Image (cartoon, rainbow, N blue to C red; front, top):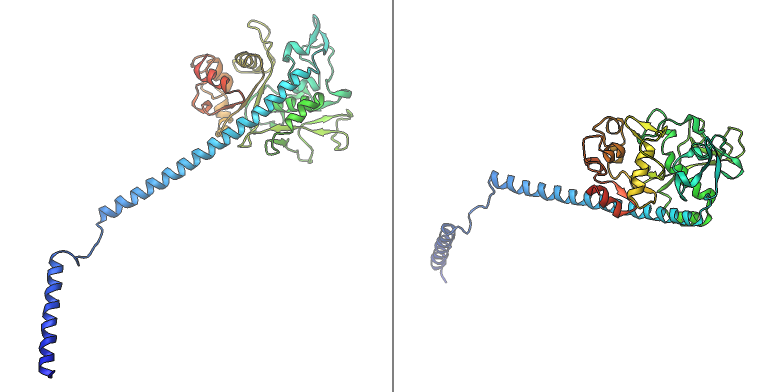
Amino acid sequence: MSNIELRMRITASDRSMRLCVRRASSAGLFRRGAFTLVEILVVVAIIVILLVSVVTLGGWAVRKGQSKNTEGMLRIVAEALEQFAADAPLAAVKQPGGAGQVTYVSRYGKYPADELEVYGSGIPGATQGRSLAPGGGVVVPDSGEFQDMTFILGGAAPQYENRDIAAMLLAIELHSESAAQILSRVSEKHLVAVPVDAAGDPVQYLDRNGDGKYNPKDDEGLRWLVDDWQVPVSYFAQRDFRAGATPSSNRQQDWSWNEVSTRLVKMNGGAPVLMSWGPDGKDQRTPENQTGSTAANIATDLLGLDGSAPNRIDNPLNADNVYANPALAEKLAGGK
C-alpha cells in the first residue's frame, strides 16, 4: 500500500470517528454529570436526618435496656422482701409506747423498715425503745440527727438521705439469711457502698460496739441500692398513716413521708414499693424539681398538690419512673 493510500484511509477513519463523537455528544452520552447546589444540600439533609434518627433510636434502645435492667433488679429485691415477710423475723417485736406498747408490725408490717431510726432510737413512737440490731448496735449518725425526708441529691447533708434504702438492706442482712441469699443475686453495680467522709469513713455505718467511732473490724458500712443510672432508688414501707392523726415528723412542706408511703403501699396491695427515678433521676432530684407546688416530687405529684389529679403520677419528669411492680405503674399512670 502506498503512502498516499495510507494517508487517505487514516483521513477517512479520522472523519468517521469525529462524526461518531459528534453524534454521541448530541445524544448526551458525553455530557458532564455535575450536581447542582440544591441537589447537594438535599443529599446532605437526608444524611443528617438519617444520622439523627440512628442516634435517637440508639439512645432510646439504650435507655429502654437500662429501664428493663433496673426493673429486673427491683423485682429481685421485691422477691427478697417477700421472703423477709415470710420469715417474719421482727413480727413479735414490741416496745413501750405512750399508751402501752408499740409494735413493729403496726408500722411496717412484716417487711424491712424504711427508716434507720429503728436501728437507733427504736420503733417510732416508743418511749423506751432500743435498736433492733442484734447486740444493740446503732447506726451512726443516729436518728436524732436525721433531717426531714427529702429526695434531693447532693444537698447540705446528703449522708442523711437514702436512708430508706440503707435501712431496708440492713434489715435483710441482719435478720433474714434466706432473704439475703435472694438479694445476693443483685449485680454489684446496683449494690454500692455509701460514700465516705473526709476521714475516709462511711457516712452511714452500723456501730456494733457503740463507741461512736468507725472500726472496720467491728463496725459495718451501709450500702445503697442504685439503678442503671447509678442513682439511689426509693423504698416505701410505712403504712400506718391515718387522716387526722398526728402527722409524721418527716414533713416536707404540705406532705409527710408517712402519708405518701401509706398511700403507695395501699395501691401496691399492701406490699412495699420500690421505685427508680428513671433515666432523668439526677436532673429530677434537684432542689428546683423537688420543692414547691410545681415539683416533680413523687409526693407532690401523687397527692395532687401541684394541681394535678390525686393518686396519679402525671408530672412529665415522673413519666419514666421504673417500679418493681408493673401493675402499680399502670395504676399510678391511670390514677386508679
